[in-house]
Amino acid sequence: MINSSSENLVLILRKWISQAPAGTQLPSTRQLVAEHSLSPVTVQKALRALIAQGLIESRPGIGTFVRGMPTARPYDYGWQTAALGTPRQKLPEVHPSQRTLPNDFIALQSGYPDRELLPERLVKSAFARAARSESVLQRTEAAGLPELQSWFAAELAEQMLPGLSSPSARDVIILPGSQSGLGSIFRALVGEGHPMLIESPTYWGAILAAAQVGVTLIPIPAGPQGPDTRELDRAFERTGARAFYAHPNFANPTGAQWSPEVSERVLEILKARGAFLVEDDWAKDFGISSDSSPLAAREDNGHVVYLRSLTKSVSPAVRVAGLIARGPARDRILADHQAQSMYVSGPLQAVALDVVSQPAWRTHLRSLRQQLAGRRDLLIESLARHVPEAHLQLVPPGGLNLWVQLPDGTDLRRLERECEARKLAIAPGASWFPAEESGQYLRLNYSGPNPGAFDQAGRILGEALRSADR
Image (cartoon, rainbow, N blue to C red; front, side):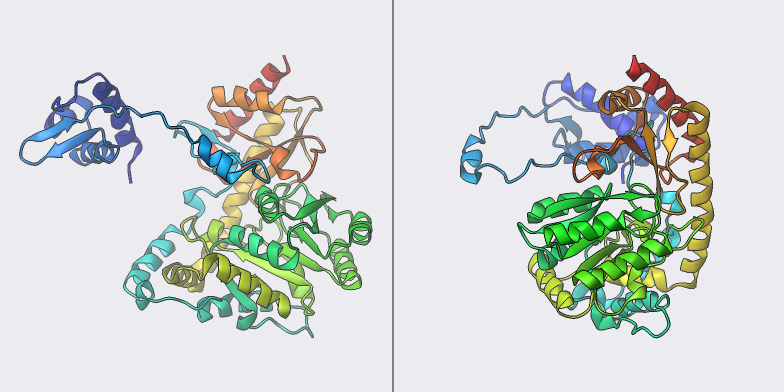
């Protein structure tokens, strides 16, 4: 993995190479070490990166030489547009939460926790054990590793209300991350051209997945206590929809958690309408002042399809999620999953199971709760100090984000540019709305790197907001 020192040297050498004729010999490693005060390992990493980019070549026993900056021959891909036709939807850009930024940026736009919040030792040990196991040479069953299926089922069973039937391992499907699971769920339960109810605002990835499937989204307004249940019931009646996608716990982006009254009323509506709830428990491991309380633990008639990911809490490199569904819904989702992904990597499943089965996993989650609380409060204090115009609808009881409303008329695009000019990355809220925005919002991630810079981030945001207003 290339580090910041190697990256800087790569940039320096790229500029030098751009001005050197092809065949020019580079300074030796020893010269580069002395000139830039770097270690030989760092210099070698930079040279390997330049070789991989095709800019230089190594001649053993002789030295390293410039190959010259490649000149790109212009291509015309117009024939592809004619062959493909008009796209059904506008192709998405890279979402702000997925962007990789220079190290000197304060990254409040990210969708992932900082490395410091991950169980790094557990993950590395698990990968080492998995590398020595048979899983690296075997294909797993389409529904997943039986032991991991059992773990997901047992976790939900711990929260089931007395008298209800707990899910079995057979009810679990292991997926390569929750995003791919959403596509399979929407295809299997809703289908192209059919309506699906969805909280507004909600996870941008769910909106994207629904668009890819061709599902028609019907927004249901959601506040600090959850969705408007009267509007939810009317929408089911008006549209004939048979599914509702929602985050009952620590919603993305708002951090809201449904009240017990809203949860019970939603279950009543689902049963009366013969409909499904697609419950995305994305922040199961990120409770702060509250714990996740899944609706899937309150009913056993198959109305709730429960999705729970490990990607954010274990490691972004471990794209593993569990889906729990009962009856024909489970079989149809599995059939679609097989058509899309065949099965999930055995070593990744083994790593995920290894991590969550360790006693230290529970210890890590307790520490994580405290760290998230501290980071959340730091960012809230910074906003209160430097951005009094910002309105926080609620202090999230869990999750990774603050959902901040700015004054009406705020030009969020301009604000984003003003912030980036000051090396602060933010995420405007438009992409979290399945229809028109209900206001001017930002989603700010308090779990990202360098919480010590949160006060500076608030100051920059305040300055940029006032500059954008002018």
